[in-house]
Length: 390
Image (cartoon, rainbow, N blue to C red; front, side, top):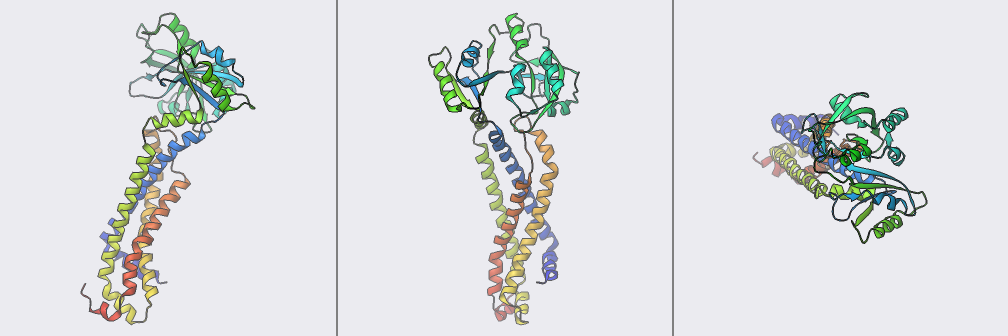
């Protein structure tokens, strides 16, 4: 195999080759980013537990449940612990600083989420200090926050009557071993919110309620049976509930974005389809220009197989070069994209499987796009090729 001959052909038209490599690079780059987003959406669901249950209103996630439900849920056989989750919906410093904030039960939160990584002493300080909060590592890094700092959060749903912000002292910064733990969210004591509402310090709120009850079940309990028992308990109201596993709850939440994975996969398929024809066109043009060259080579004794292999290898090398550039570019910018979309889709990353997919598709496009002109070149008769006018 004479690679010197192949490289000479590749760079015979430098501009055309460079444009084709750039097109393949852009296609592979877009494909890697799209697949990373699809993977992040899927990992959020797969990382969620099938042993933790979420109890929400059967009407909508935006309808809160009564506080009185907690004791009734606790009486259901198989329920080990309950952690209240109330969406706060505020912002830090500026309205554009959007991230999740939840009022929770510090007594049961950490036991329910072994995926949460935090210093035990820091968590203990959080549990004992009612006016403290825990901050996810991504939010802490974004705003330069440290333990001991004051964090004012202005409420949108729970606005203070005097117009002031809710101020918490940062007791600890946490991370997560899986995407089940949102490393952007801020957590504070539910009792602080509850007492402020009861004292009339929150505009438009007179009765503290709960958005979601997170249930940690006993080891030998059946998630489906516990879910059915909880739903049946509130069948007649006053507020019907829907109990699902955390994995199903996460899947439903992701589905609120619509058929995003299907859309992104469709776009990726379109990109691959387009780049295939771009490379095919390049190779067909190159093949026509070299018709007489092929005739000379065959007249000198080079076989049809030799011509076929060299033509395919030329196409493959162009696509592989584009694939390598596209994958490297996607890897370089993935961290910036992850930060840009972190509030909507956490966990975006260009992992090995995404890089292999991008590179593999570039290789496949190279083989398929080179096969047609290679077959034409191999089937040429030397006399016909020498008579051809380029």
